[in-house]
Image (spheres, rainbow, N blue to C red):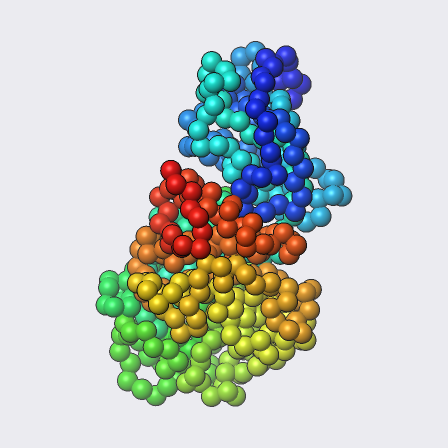
Length: 510
């Protein structure tokens, strides 16, 4: 660090206001000091070097700055003469950093200091810094391009440890590149979970080496009769690594005992509804079920869960469990309790949709609320944590209004303000705050089959969910948020993200 602290030419920056920067999610505390840091070609990035993950964060920041500004900033290497302004990403043990993802950002005229306990915290902090870099340089201040970043202090921590998005790759298949593009935007807004819905009646999307017909047969269909597709285990590992580089945890979901036609069509012994099996490309739900009384079904699931768990470093395995209308209640309860033990045997924590609370599940297992508050409360009383994904608020596949061409509306029409204007802490009456693990926005894919369609339904609503999951409740205000949302247009355009231009927001015109 010392080598870079030589004399720098003083620049008379225009007055700036860090507190009015359109940051999403809104930080816990921002203090403006009304000067600025000048980002230019002489700027250098230094990181704590005792943890290689911090250096990776520095390199990620350098790559993103280059993509936005063209500047190629060195990481942990001084330029000739060492006269550049400094960005320092520091591992800190400060007690003010309350969670693993907390960070502190100090922006001065000649330096930016980012403190975090973990590389995940540092990674969240650099997303804030990325949002502070203007689209255009201000070269009237100097004889070379300079990007003016407002000075001050930001103290920030997430409200919830689980801030997720779910993508249904089963109804329609999405390619590696499409999933990666979605992840890039999720990372920018500080999400830390991507839940992949990998199987359903219409398709099976992950290679299971011990049961190859799952992808040979079950992977060849999708809604509307398209060609489907699947991820090889190597491709899935690539997604897992891409996520890890962005401090995102992948949660794999194999939906069961319902939503299982693609699996049973591939291996008919699994079927429990007694009906003739055929490939399914429609959108109805509730007709399929595994046979909950067959030992061979659980042997099959032991193989499937084992293979996926072995290539999933995250702590979770999602068993679905929703809409099993063709499964007897006693069979359903028996099934969930048996599968929970298989998940635990493979070293993972079970997550399931709120219906799993009907069974006697372990307090370590997690219920994901989509439509039955009483089951969320029942699970919480059992000691389980709850993920909030209420269909009427954050199901991103719901239409914005009756004129929206994509999406469904069986839960509700969800305009952009409706998906933002709810408080996870008070949404379920009687659910203690400490039982809430976090929020997650599912995007089911009955009506979408490519990135442009995915993005049209997800954006801008997913950006609001980012704020609900991160920002303190007192910082949530629609009138304030919609002004900051309008100013996300340059980023969305730069990333070629399609979005719904709701009239509720006065969008920034370029």
